[in-house]
Image 1 (cartoon, rainbow, N blue to C red):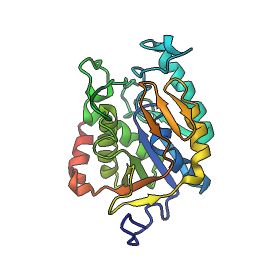
Image 2: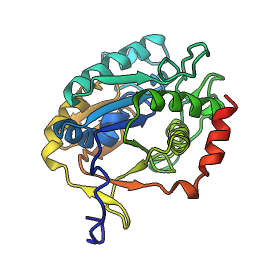
Image 3: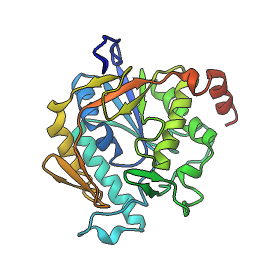
Length: 269
């Protein structure tokens, strides 16, 4: 049902495989952990693409604080992600820039965390000191081509990522969303954006029965957040409710880029 109560086609109807495109380790669980657990339980094959290793993330005060600003943080976040994926039931996981999420013939690369700054309460913006190899500074055509390479290899029935604001404005969220959308258009794969609230024209999934699984997966990301009951406290001190229920809305490709435009972007790479 849509948010207005009008019957609409089930976005997941007939889907046998779904690919989630996320920016950093922990985003898959925070933004879509309940939905991932639901899809796995339905027998739908779930693939996760993670764009960066979250090297510039803050760290929860405590035993892991010394990892801030070190390469060891990326190793820790990879370990945490592996734990979360075991809980959620994901076995197909790929890093952007590494085959098969890399254009054939191109050397492997790591898209680094771009960092962010808070521009207002709950809204992030780009950091002035993003490294030259950061995801947000990478050519959109290159990023799109890498996502498209993975889509061509896995052929999902649906691609899911953030809305056009990247959820809360993080530049890495916006970049991977834009690339995933354009790659989906080029390969004629439906693209759906994640929504936090019921919205007209979207399908809402009440997933309270997946709360325990999602919460257990969140606990894996101990460097980034702490679970307190039905809430999480992030490394920066922000407190948010755990939200297993989410909305999905199919994005009209014509409103973003034509298939020809998207294919031309890929052709350049």
